[in-house]
Image (cartoon, rainbow, N blue to C red; front, side):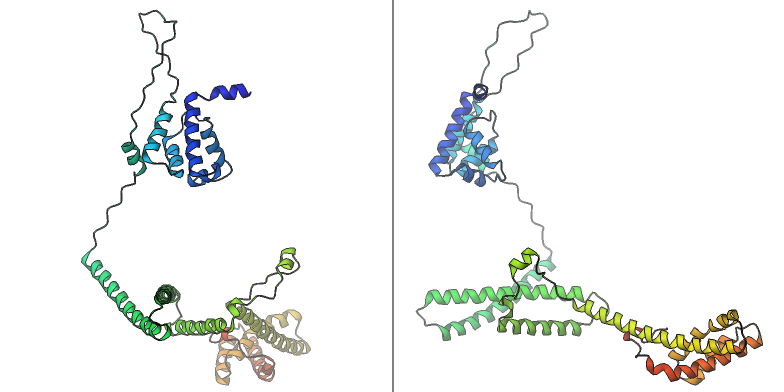
Length: 381
């Protein structure tokens, strides 16, 4: 098996590998270092370099050889020499088919190798070859004016910044502390640049937030001011760098859990659901009590269960009228409109009597119902 592997490597490939290995050793690099500098990653990265140096690649790519040589800090002449060695590894030539009227040649024809002309200049052009740059778009006059305005605005801010930095350095450092002055001034410039970027991000965020209908600029500004004060207070108190009272080992073991905070909007929605549930439960309790009392009265008058159910079907409507209209005249008017749909005069009188009873009992029991939730104010029941 070893003999077969040795036969697969030609002398030219072995010479090329030895030249590559000499470049790497001269640069003081390992095979893994060369692979990394070539941009090769993964498990097989080092294997590629190893096979190159041992001559296992019969036709290595020129790009691979150039990257290998550049990783070893080789010059153009050395790269040209490496490419010249790679061109001597010729592929076997296919036999030339005999002519139609000629007898078949049984004697093997000698193979001719064509040595390429590789020069340092051609290698330099190969190394420095770059993609052509895209032509710049011609700016309009309006765009050029806008650029000048932005530059003028930026220079105005820089002028004010340098004036403030001058006062800080003049009062805080001696004149001979040149390096300290330079470092502190550069820190101030970078801080101002970070704040300017933060401002641009905040303005874009504000525009996106104001796309939501119902939100005013005053509300957005108020939130920004409150959050800014909160952040400053947390920074002064050291809360931003405070170590949490959580043991990472217990979290990793599953004993403790990291619970995210309850979002503000979700908390408000939960409170609204609880408020609605409490109000609806109390309202239903009063409605069922009035219905049970009136159904008992109808039963005592001798009405059947079906008759009681048909009459009590309108009782819920009268309860809604009583809840939404505290004015007695409005109640009576709406009750008469509802009773006018009855087919017989007797049924109409029974509905008006029911409405009078429901309105009176509702006023007596409405104290048991909490105030109407804000989400339902101004809506129909």
